[in-house]
Length: 179
Image 1 (cartoon, rainbow, N blue to C red):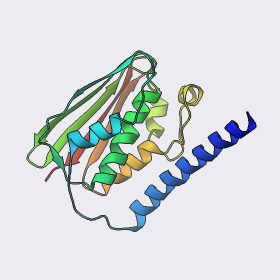
Image 2 (image 1 turned 45 degrees about the vertical axis):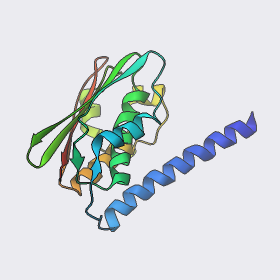
Image 3 (image 1 turned 135 degrees about the vertical axis):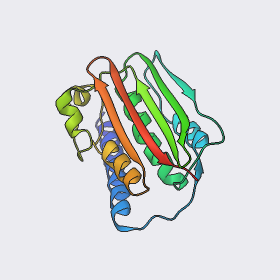
Image 4 (image 1 turned 90 degrees about the vertical axis):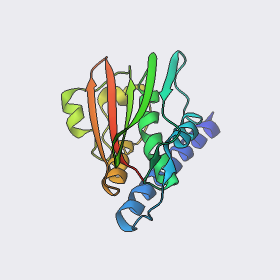
């Protein structure tokens, strides 16, 4: 039991260090301009994110949408948003929708039927290490996911918005640059 606890602690620390390194890289290194196929990135992420039993993914993403982000950052960005939806949704669904919203923009919307956030929590959602009280009780995490997502998008001329209601779920809208 002690060995399993130690193993779990090491994994949490490894994950935290990995997240902090992504943030540091975003702040100190100019990112190369490249692109990735959004549907492929979502498929990679969804293949590694396991929602709770009774929670289903509902995905509708055209195969031809390319985002003007490197594939590794696209994966990090989507993983942060989808992993949050999976962690805080106890029943229902996680919907992932994408569409071209303008000549130079793709809108990616991830909606869940999870625990949601209070108005006060929404005001802090992008703060590093912030986690709401209900979120802390329901699942582990570092509180870095949304901060990293916003930083990635801001550094690539994108944006992120969140709407949420307690016990009704959360909708995260990403506006991504396209090629």
